[in-house]
Length: 289
Image (cartoon, rainbow, N blue to C red; front, side, top):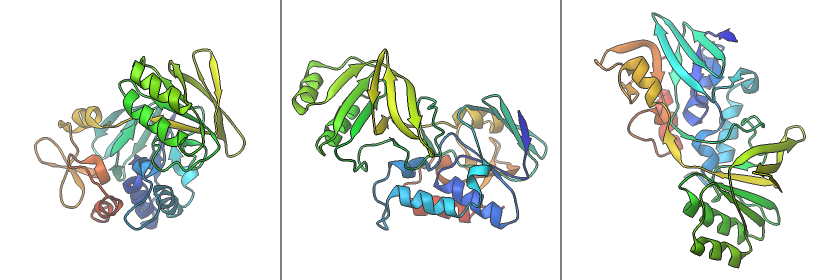
């Protein structure tokens, strides 16, 4: 499947959504290529201005008219190719091209199973952290990444303390101490990997997950995975450097320090991590689109 647009945005976190809104305002019809919508905001309980990350994400989406129609799957983007003015993104059996602006705003990514529910949900039962999940008297499933059992145990105990029925699913074997903590709190523990999710309704909400041969009914799934940079391979192949190097106007530089025409970087895509929504949005204001 091949699609051409007059502008492309890689990513759908705060900087990417702001960049998409700016492109629309400038008369472009951009496509937004991303596996998720909201980025780090989905893990933020409260911003400096008092809003939840979810509220901020929704506000940003309001600035991108028709964002659902503009969004394209991008969970397995594995190639970024430059040929003169043409920029090409490839992955998941799809190809996206543009001769207009390409904004790269990958930032940080939560690694996750390829859920059958499209991850443009915002309020459809999937969260990436326990801190801002305020559910009570619900069925909550916490999934631990490999090596992340301790963090997941803390998350399970946290949501259990709010009166939820909690199941912890971990691919690694838990220690006796961890089993003891969970048992004392009334948290069910299963060893294995989540291999399937089920959702119902429109918009869909997660209703169950499966690990091994066990199906767990759930109202909320906390996919307790760590952040990691996901752009290094793409950047190395396209620009000769692992980090997205940009100048003061957001223009991408190659390994020799030369400007790459028509390619821009925003948000956390640089080596210096942006730590606030304000910084991410300010990075978009500097873009010389």
